[in-house]
Image (cartoon, rainbow, N blue to C red; front, side, top):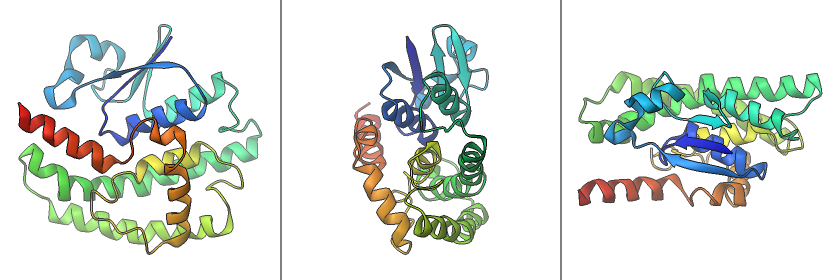
Amino acid sequence: MLTIFGFDFSSPANKVRFAANAMGLKYEYKRVNLLAGEQKSPEFLKINPTGRVPAINDDGFTAFESAAIIKYLADKNNSELYPKDLQKRTTVDEWIDFTNLHVATALQRVTFNRVMYQMLKVEKDERSLNDGIRFLGQFLPLIEKQLKENKFLAGNEMTLADINLLAALDPAELSSVDLSIYPALTNWRKNLKAQSFYTKCHNSLEEVFQGMLAGAGAK
């Protein structure tokens, strides 16, 4: 039985759930309460020595790092989301890498310094925030251009590259990042967020965050 370890507010962990849902996989989802430090427990560190989510246990085989996990699941289940053709697969890989290196990391800077710093009771890093905004302005136009020319990020079929980007951009509204200036990206995102692989996880990350705040306030 496949077990996915995650945290509802973690975009990388949600990426794995999106992918598993899109592949129609049966799995058990186990929440790891990052706010309570459960990721540092000896039991969890045996599964993921980095003490982070996501992680999986697939009948005794454990793995961490979201990109590696979704590729593993796609290969194991012969999913068309990760093409076997070498050139098509390389195109998927390059957009996964581009998103993770340039878009996800930039938005994480913004999310941390506009949203999370208060919850974690640390100082806002204005330089990091401004760098994140600048990087998004530099790299999102390349995503927009690609989606103007193609139905999906790596061509005319949905792939892991789309799921990866969808998860990376999930904190946009919560972080006050306006994506409406990118119409092709906005339409692509609206279409994917309406699909069941996404809605089985949540309606929006904003809703998850508000629920997390309410739960913290109730304690």
